[in-house]
Length: 198
Image (cartoon, rainbow, N blue to C red; front, top):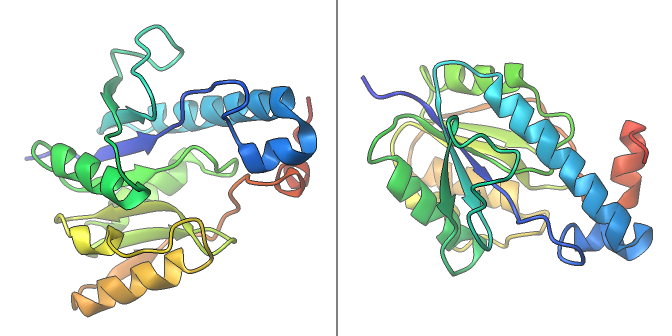
């Protein structure tokens, strides 16, 4: 029986290229420090989930010597293209060996291992699971069978991502379960809300 998989998409943490909207108000160095803290949180959260295979997709290059365990995470490189094309390629690859498959980003400070476990449980009953983000996107999406259409013709980085995705699932005549609505960390006020300071 295939094991569940969790895909994590990250950007390689480079000064001046991490959390650019956040950096606009806090500066490049603090934005990078905040992003590294978000990466640590995401890494530890995924590692706390048992019975899964974990895949890590880097934006620029695979780092074999970073804090992400080479024993726990299968490391891959995101292909060229928009976010939808990158996600489709990742799901295509992981569905060859695993089912169901879930993707999470690295921007959600309130993500917990319990939420990830709930997502896996929901997929025992539903075709899809979605974790909505307050900004209109989502921090998690999982599915039992590969349906690339839910990533096509999406207005990424807008408040339309979640509603457009749901409408595509409904067009497939498939059902979905919802996780708690959480906040992504995109702006300074998002970070301040958590009271995490450097």
